[in-house]
Length: 276
Image 1: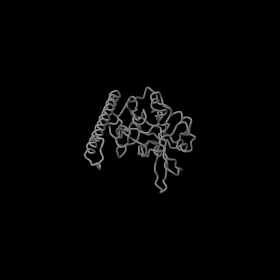
Image 2: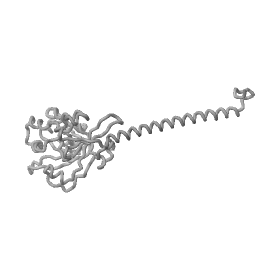
Image 3: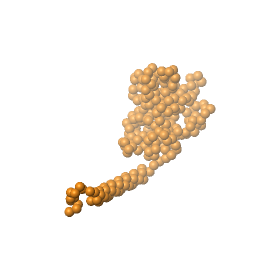
Image 4: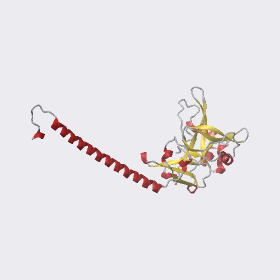
């Protein structure tokens, strides 16, 4: 699957790479794009026989859906037949520009994030679908989903799925709204070559969505991180041991003080065992 990605290249780089006309406003560098965020998508400009960039909310909703429950990923194997996606697959395909995405290993508190990107660190285009959905109060929202395919060997250690990255020379065929050759379109959606993808560990700060900064993509030394984690675990155990010992000391002191107090307290003429 794909649940978080980055787009930090300059506006000029993005426009040049995907052959889109200049925009009046720049595309802000983002290092932690999450579901429900507004993201740039590239679609065919049918009026001028070119391409244009528009904004869409990440979380696809079919135009006829009533509840508006968004879906962030669409499986390539079923988009041609699944009612939720098949109309968009036939007529509303898009490219979602990115320069990397994140995946995780481990479970729970042990989850570790990895950044995945092309070997040459260039921009890539995720295969996507878009749809315009109207809420109950009449507000129209453009939504999108990233298409996923079976994981290649590099990605298999993280998940059994990965985003469909469109080969650059096939992007035009993918975007062409007049292309109704569904088998051909499905053939474009393949796992990206293993030797063109690399990955490295990054900060666990990316586990949340509140932080969005360049530090999120900086490589982390996994060996040093493991050593730090082990050192922190040992320190935590030592603190717990000291607290336990301190607790025992307080308990013993409390007992002694209670005994002393009992000696001084009156007993209505009855002898106490402590007086013998």
